[in-house]
Each structure stands twice: as structure tokens, then as C-alpha cells.
Length: 405
Image (cartoon, rainbow, N blue to C red):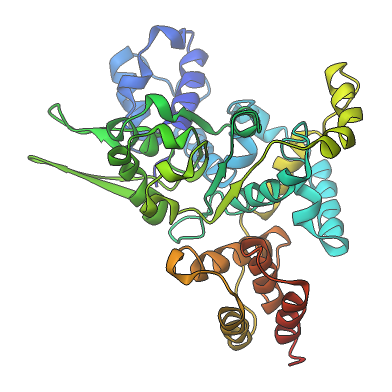
């Protein structure tokens, strides 16, 4: 399984620097093939430079270990904005501190809801109660960030007028979590998927950021015919380009977090791929007064934001856990009870965007606490997905989940 191109580039840049060559003098962007393994791309760069990058203390075992480490700890080591560590830095980790930190996480998830607890660490500078559900949705997307081979990926769309902090949210995710940031006004289907006009297909942004978050600002500015470039990647985790003699398949297991001003300019098939669609409004007078103290503190630098590294350490702690389902018959019963109970317009939802989305959300909720999926997780996912339910209806679903009805 090849590492993402952006990650391979960072690793090889360090290897090039170790042998005394300035990486900026080497066109690594052109040399690195995202479909090849790290060791294969290292060999290509070595031939181009005429030197061994695995000299001076860098062995084949080091390269393989580096690749394995990065595959297993992508969120912790690459998406925190600090770049890829050296082998020496990996070996110098404080094991005792890590173990103590993980024990703290176990205590947190045993005593509180990790979705509530850790979502507060996401873009904390953005003020307003309407952003709390968005923080939770983004955290759920992050929870399954590096799951491979199955559709547990959660996509989030934020819609609202200018001034509702949509772009600020995406930029925070990009700067703090290493996500790709794309302005929809300047991207095309070719840019998203790839260019087949030459002798070979050149992969696009989605393939380059396989395994990453992709933030798309102003999604509604992408022409409808180009929006189709996102469909297969968001659903299948790969896409295929067929043009003339060219036929190429690219892996693109991305999590899309997007913003838009006008929902009507987004195609129905694309809207159907999003698990969460939030519609923001400008805050009213009462809400502005409620948050003015924090706003003033932020402006004068007296408000201390939480350390993002805590969130990244937590995400690393849950990365390898794969929830199983507990009492699948009861899960089926809860899902059936919900379908019979809700008053949503089913003509607007496919299985993908409702029932399967609820199951994906429940999976992510369970993973956040490193637990298996319970019927109660299904109800929690339903409440996050469907805001039309009354408190009485929610209590009924929990009663079904607990076997009281």
C-alpha cells in the first residue's frame, strides 16, 4: 500500500538533505510517482541524483521501518503540521509519557462522552452555539480518518452566508490537521481527478491526498459538470479515468469537509454523499452579547486556546481500534423503529445518505471510546443525524435500544 504522495515527498526531502543536497534544487514533485512504494520512489530519485540516499546511516531497514511507522501513525506524525520526524526522533519518544497519556484517555472515555469532550478542541476560536454540532461532525470524520478498505468515511458540508466562519473552519482544519485546502472557484474536474491529455494520466488532487482530509471552500462555485469528479472518490475511495486509450484507476480515500454559500448550486448526487449538511446563520443580538467577553479576550491575546497535540494524541490512541457490533438483532430493531417513527421526507434521502450514514456515524462514535457498537450508539447517531425528532421520540428509541420496550 503506497503512502500518499505528499508524505513520500516529505520523507525523501529529509533523505536528500541528509546527504548534503538542498531539496529545493530537486524536482521531487515530478519524480515521485504516487502509485509506487516509498522504496521505489527513493530508487528513482537516487538514479536522478546519482547518489545513494540510503548511505550515511540510512539503511533499507530504516526506510522500511519509516514507511511502516508512517502508515500506522499518519494522523499523529504527519497531520499535526510539524512535518515528518526523523528516525532518531521516532526512537527518542518518551514511552513512559505516552503510556501515562493513554491511561488518561482511558479514564476520560470511562467517565465522560469523548464526543463532547474532544470536540471542544476543534476550532475553539469560532464562537457560537451553532458550531457545536459541526465540531462533533468533524471529530467523527477524524475518528475513522485512516480506516482503509471499507466505507466508514464521513463527509461534512457547511452551508451559510458570508461571514458565518465557514472558511475559517476549513482553514483551521488545514493548518492544524494538515488537510488539503482547495478553493472551489479555481478547481476543475481535471484538477480534482487527473489529466489524460498527455501520453499518460497525471493524477489530480484527490489521488495526491489519498488518506487525507480534503477541505473544499466554496463548493458551489465548482461547475455542476465538474462536481461529478468528487462522486466516486467520496463513495468508493477510488476513481477511474477512461479517455481514449487511457484507463487509469487511482486510490482516493479522502474525507471531504466542504463549505458553500448556495445549496441549490450543488448537484443532488453530490449532496447525497455528505453525511452531515449544516446550514448556518449570522448570530443575533443576544448571541453576540453572550460571546463578547471571549471575543475581546481573543483579540487582545488573553484567551489561551487548547493544545491541538492533545487531540492528535487521542486520535492516534483510537486509530487501530476496529469496533464490532454488539447485539445486531437489537440494532436492526432500533433502526426499524426509527424508520417507522421519523417524519423526514424519504424522497430526499437514499439508503447511502440515511440508513448507511447512521451506521457510519455509530461506528465512529464507538471508535471514539474504543468500544464496540451498541444499540445506544445507533440512537446517538440518529439524534446527530435527524434533528426533527422530539425528546419523547428519542426517549422511545433509547427504551427500544435498552430492551425496555
